[in-house]
Image (tube, rainbow, N blue to C red; front, side, top):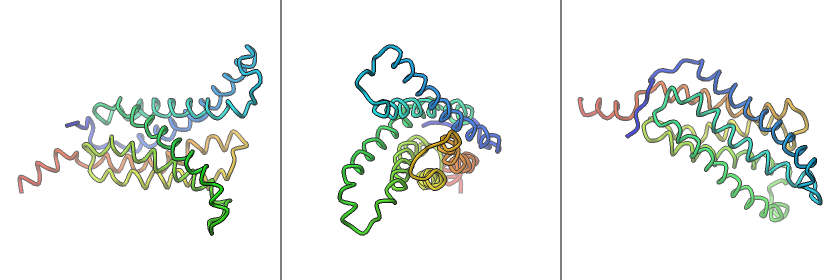
Length: 208
């Protein structure tokens, strides 16, 4: 069973979590455009539209950078924290699969009562659910009430969607993509890690 290293993190964890998530998103955006510029210089994307390669490169970059930078933040607080990277990347994979299925269902949306303009917010909710679910699998091993991580992730990503809207047009909106979910999940993380680990809870119950 995993064991928590520190039981009572302070709110500096929240600050670092938000900063790391924001930095990861902005760095991924910069890395994406740098990569595309390099590909153009070598004519490797000749015949392809920039939009065709921009999103796949960005998703790969932001998934990896978020997972790694968040791991750097939580490694002082959680044992075997490196596994966070794998669980987070798995969440991105699950989210992509769910979003592909949702996009294929887009034609059906126009025929039912759901308004098509609400679809982008549904996509943000899917992102929050997929990431929250796989990260919950990591947290649940020794963090009591870890189930709250899933709704926190959904709320955080929905908050990003409400602030950004259906499309990202400015660097500030890109920053929000990293900051908004982290504000909610970071606060939840501090609350969860301040609780006694599951092993301590079990010992306490047996002692009663």
